[in-house]
Image (tube, rainbow, N blue to C red; front, side, top):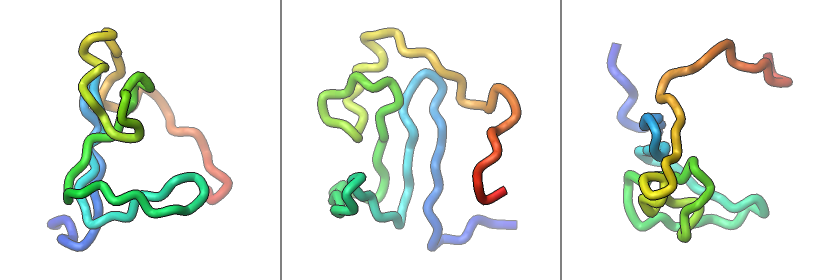
Length: 80
């Protein structure tokens, strides 16, 4: 079964960013639309990027470590 070409996908990169491939809409917490300027963006996971929410590669310099695969059961959300 193939992925729908019209849906966004998120790829978790080990020790790195989240790659978001569109189409997608990125918004601030206040709902303002952020124009990423491209169809694929890298979103910061280390919290140290100077261009948040986007990745600037700082995770490499600070030694950020995080697996790409889930490490346990996912927490239940209010929708579950």
